Image 1 (cartoon, rainbow, N blue to C red):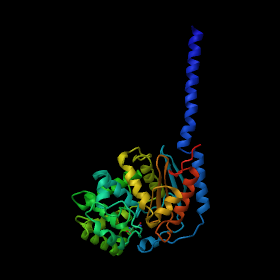
Image 2: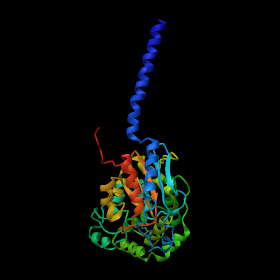
Image 3: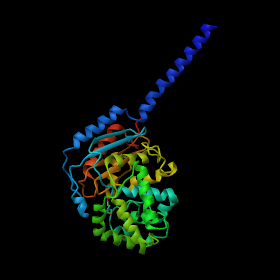
Image 4: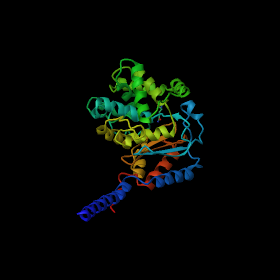
Length: 349
Ligand code: GLN
């Protein structure tokens, strides 16, 4: 009797052990091993540390003054672990990366259709602040199929105008709180950048006025341009951006704080627009190279998302002609491709 019980428990133990052993490679296929991740991050940092290509944005005077040597990488995995290299503390202005989170906030509040119907989710094929792109699509306003998107300035200013709130301050509080939740800490506006851009943003004011004239913005276009300028001036470091990317990678839940920021059923819409238009008129090239939904900002940051695997961000101010950070693109592509981050790159064993 005793022996029988013993052999039964031994069998059970073996079964349990077998299950554990069988699960390990499955988990390993999902998430790369920590040592492998840190190795990939360090290798990209070493490879691109001395790359001097590109130039800081200077159409916003404060951006020209940012140290072009600043270079930081942060990759965040499902368990909230943050893998870093370089300077992950110095803040730059978030710039256009904020467009993702304001779009996500509108989708969260008003549903996936709100953005696709009012603004559109198609690439413009033009620069991020193109006025010709607005002229090109204005005839279809009201047909339910505008060929614009919330990640270029006209669409982003429209998206900001859609965030509900009785006063400008009430809308702002919602915008900054959403960014805070995605980053997992209290962020603040870089006042020098906000002032510098407010003093020189006549082009965005023209864009706001045109978007009102053509029906994309319903009211308060000046407030929308001001709040948009303010959201672009939020200070973030590479770690903040990596965490924000990871919030999008893990079904809208910030893996560092555990807070559910975006409804899991809506994240795919946000990622789709990032894939279509996140790197402006170079979005196709970027997707071809990495397969990753991503978003750049003229402050030098880029976030990229490998759904279910990791969120990654790099900060490095010098930009290429399209307005995308040169080193950030190179480093993210190298790291993601070495970790199997491309969701389109399925290789049966
Ligand atoms: N605030 C900037 C602008 O409106 C954002 C542009 C960007 O990051 N591409 O021009």
